[in-house]
Image 1 (cartoon, rainbow, N blue to C red):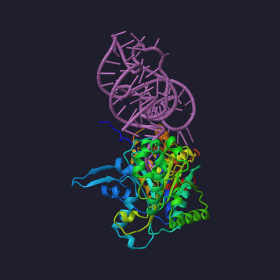
Image 2 (cartoon, rainbow, N blue to C red; image 1 turned 45 degrees about the horizontal axis):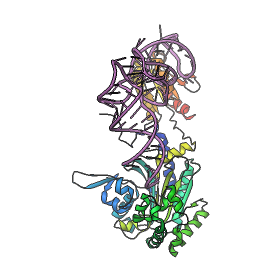
Image 3 (cartoon, chains in turn green, orange; image 1 turned 135 degrees about the horizontal axis):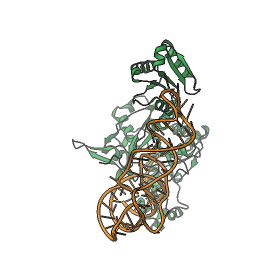
Image 4 (cartoon, rainbow, N blue to C red; image 1 turned 30 degrees about the vertical axis):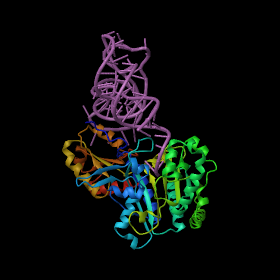
Length: 422
RNA sequence: GUGGGUGUAGCUCAGUUGGUUAGAGUACCAGAUUGUGGCUCUGGGGGUCGUGGGUUCAAGUCCCAUCACCCACCCCA
C-alpha cells in the first residue's frame, strides 16, 4: 500500500504548526473580546441536517458531501460547513429559551468533495462565528467589524469587504419575478449554467463569471430596489453602524451567497491576487434557518473563514509569523557512564518549567554539539569525567559561546536566569 | 464534473538528436579538530527515474494508459 494522504488532504507537520497556532490564538482572542465563546460540535451529523440547513439545491449538498451510513444504517455526513451544526446544538439544548443573544465561535475541519486546487481542499479548516436571537443591525455591523479586525490582526493587506442585502423571503419573491422578466427576452444567450440557475435560483445568475453573461447583466434590476421597507431600513442602519465603526465596505449588489439560508445582510472578504480562490471569508444573516431546522423563529447571523486561504493571504502580504522560542537547554553526557546524571538533570530542569532535552542516540560528542546548534539550543550542559571529578557542570551559553562551571545546587537557578534573557 | 501543465535522491532541480555505472545543490553521516555548534575543506551513504504496458539492439528520454500533484473552469471558506 502506498503511504499517501487522501486526495485533497494534507498533514500539518510540527515544523509548520506554529503558524496555525498563531492564527488560531489571534482569532480566538478577538472573538472572545467580541463576546463569542467557543463551541465544539461533532465532525459528522445526520445527513438530514445539512439537507435542511444548507439547502438541497446547493452545490454543497447536491454533489460535494462525504455521506456514509454507519453500522446501524444511519445516514451521516462529514460536516461541509459549521452553521448547521451550531443551529442544531442551539435547538437541541434549548438555548433559544435562555439568555439571548447566544454568541459562539468555532474552529474545525470541514469536508467537501471538490476538485482540489490552490486554496481549495477536500478537508479544510474554518473559523466561524454565529450569533442567535437578535436582528439588531448593530449585530450585523459588529460581526463584520470582527471579521475586519481579524484580517487586520493577521497582517493581511489589500483586502476588500463586499456587502449586499439579499432581503427577506417576501422581497425575494418580488425580486425573483422581476429578474425572470428581465432575462426573458435574451434567455437563450445566457450560458447553460445560467439557464439552469434561472430555473433553480435566478439570483445566482448575477454571480456568473462568464464574460458573455456579465455583459448581459448590464442594467439588471438591483435587489435592494425590491427590498421591502423593513429590509431596506435594516440594511441602511447596518451601513450607518459600519460607518460609525469605520469599517470600509464595498456596496456590491451582485453579491449572492451560494447557501440557501442567507437573508438580509450578506458579505464577503476578498483578497485579489491570491489566486482563483480569493474569497477568504464570507457570511450573512439567516433569519429563517433556526425555524427551518425545527426550532423557534429566531434570527441569526454569522460568517466563516477558510484558514488555508488566510495562510496564503498572510504569505502573500509578507506577514512573518514568529517562531516560538522556548529557550531550549540540551544536556550532553560525554560518555555512557554519565547518562543517568544527564537524565536526572534533564528532569530537574523540566520540573522547573525549563524546556530541556538530552541526547538519546549515542552520537559522537561533536555530533551532539552540532545537533544542539541545529535545534537552536539556548544553552548546553556538559557532564563528563572532568566535571564529575570537580563536582560541577559545564554550562555553555550558545549565543555568546562562553562557558562557566556551576555547582549542581545552583545549576537550575543559573539556567533559569540564562534562558530568561533572550 | 471539464480543460491545461508537471512527475528524476528526504527537499529544490539538471539530464543534449534515445546510447556505457543517472548527476548537481541542499539535507544527512563521518573526518580535518580523539571534549566544544554555526564558517570552511575532504570523504561517504542514499534512486522501483510516479505506476503499468508498448516501440527499439538499446528508454529517465519516444508512444499509450493510469495515478498523483499543480493551475484554471466551476463552486465556496
